[in-house]
Image 1 (cartoon, rainbow, N blue to C red):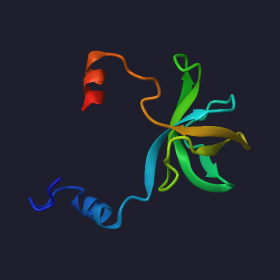
Image 2 (cartoon, rainbow, N blue to C red; image 1 turned 120 degrees about the vertical axis):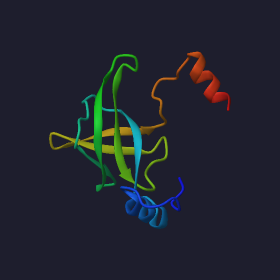
Image 3 (cartoon, rainbow, N blue to C red; image 1 turned 180 degrees about the horizontal axis):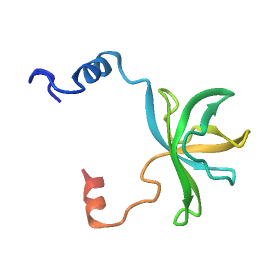
Image 4 (cartoon, rainbow, N blue to C red; image 1 turned 120 degrees about the horizontal axis):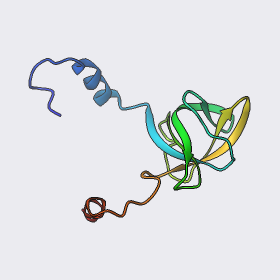
Length: 114
C-alpha cells in the first residue's frame, strides 16, 4: 500500500500501525478439551490473559471444536498451547495453522506450489 497518494479514510491508523507494528495476531486454534469456544471468551497462557476468541464452532470435518482468536504478538506460533476460559473453567487448546483442513481442489493446490 502506498501512503504517498494523498489522504484517505483510515490513513492515519494505517501509518501508525506501520510505524509501531501490530500488537496482536489472528490465529486458528483447535480445542484439546471437549467444549466449544465462542465469541468473546478470554484466551490465556500461563495464567495471563493474552487475547479473545473471535469465533468458534464444532467442525464435523475435523471432528472437534475449532475457532479463531486474536492473541498478543509472540503467542501465534502453531503448536503453542493456550487456555480458553469457558464458563469459568480454563480449557486446553492448541494454536494451529490455517486452513484447518487441507484443501484438495485445483486452485488451492496451485497456490501451495507458489
